[in-house]
Length: 352
Image 1: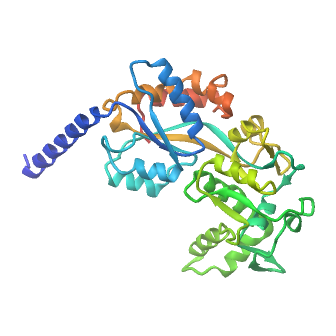
Image 2: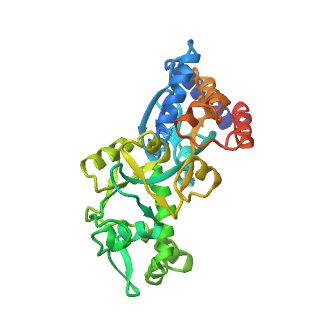
């Protein structure tokens, strides 16, 4: 047998044995990532702890989808997390980083859906928004007289005469959050198209070919103004809520479930005439929704005590079903067939 092959397999076996031994030194599942998924993960972990007395309750940290996936992809072993929570899908570039660092088998657990809502102080009047309103208020450059100009708008009424004459201040998710990417795709891109800004950006984009120019233009429409009108929030939704409390004329971006648990403090805006709710998101009427998921290191199953049990428990009907505590908190449950397929895939440890 080839001596190099023997050496490689010996090193690999020793490495995996070392990981297994090291993993046993940690007897608690470790999770990090999305602030949107955080409350659902906390509920699932709390219920798991109550029903599995012999296993420790998982430790869960927030920090955003991007930050959680980055930690997830650092490698295998006791010093790395087992699960990354995410309010967006993992990117190809992140999968490549995982592969490079030895995280080769990943189980995706898409457990339900959530909406992104726009809300103001509860004492405010009613707000009816469209993506074009938000784009004109927040984009760095907007169309004016057939050309792109630095955003001149100071009040919401200048953008849409039916909106109040408040100074434009919107608290939007920071760039490390999965919610920001959904906001960019479903609001900024849609708003650019509705106002014609996408074509104007494309006309002035530079690139080797049409595809390269479109890529430049698509990125340009996502740029928000830096004059204080669009404020990045790097913390979770509680920070956004605190900003609105200190500035009652601000607009905040939240997950539906967070809003529904704070209706005494917030009033939600309609979008394209649709009020966000579990029903309008489940039906597809409300235009800004996204799947929620987490990613599991398959190599950690069987070595980190409680990992397999936690994931199987989390996707059970009693947790993610229509009558479960996640739905009660605000999760939009997946259709029955989708939940069943997920439960079967988790039981089989089916990797992506």
